[in-house]
Figure (cartoon, rainbow, N blue to C red):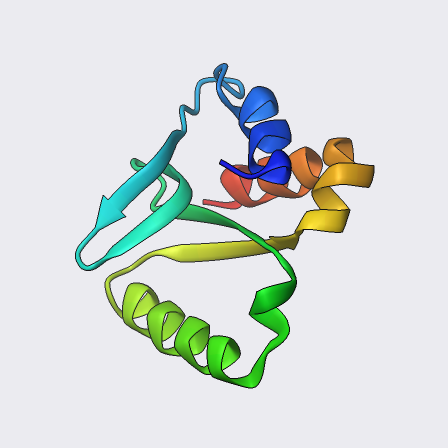
Length: 99
């Protein structure tokens, strides 16, 4: 795991008010950074290479496919996780409570 993924995993690995996450979980041909299976919520932590045109295209293809299968995807930049993991967790909780 990257430093950012480790920071987020340390915040997610304990139940978030009854919701459990797994890390590096395979879904079809893809591997989600983190997932809450019952809620079908995927969390991705993106480094700088996700800013390249080719990677953005690949990410969009992947996201479209997973959304077709009923998954919701939240994406966060490394910098966001590194500097304000509390806000990232708040955003994740808001999404969990919507569902």
